[in-house]
Every structure is written in C-alpha cells, then in structure tokens.
Image (cartoon, rainbow, N blue to C red; front, top):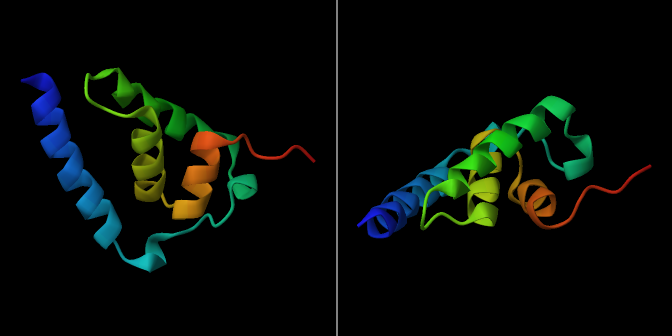
Length: 84
C-alpha cells in the first residue's frame, strides 16, 4: 500500500515540477551550486527512505523545485561536480 501510494503521489509531483515556469531556474550548472544548495538536496534525498521513492528521482525533482535546471539536478544526482 505504501509503495503504490508513493508511486501515485510521486507521479503528481513530477508533473507539477515539469509544469513550473522556466523562469524558476536560478542555477544552470551543478558547479554553480553553493554548499547550502547541496545541503538542501541532501535533505531532499532523505525522502528516498520512503519505500517506492527513487533516490535519483527525488534528487532531480527536488533540485528542480529548488531552482536547479534539469541538467544541473541530473548532474548532481549522478556525477559529482568537477573539482577546480
């Protein structure tokens, strides 16, 4: 029951995040993130403790809701930002 509910709610959250205005993006590249942005995304990843929630999905959608571009959120989720 928990997994089914999570799948359904997660689908609605994904649709909502995708329909947000493109002007909501304030960070275009993962390298432009501040440590506070990374901390917020780490806290969003805690949602993956709920059965049926994908860690990468939570990071990408959470990042988009926090103002990251889809590319920056995906890069942060799968690959660590490059070190300069």
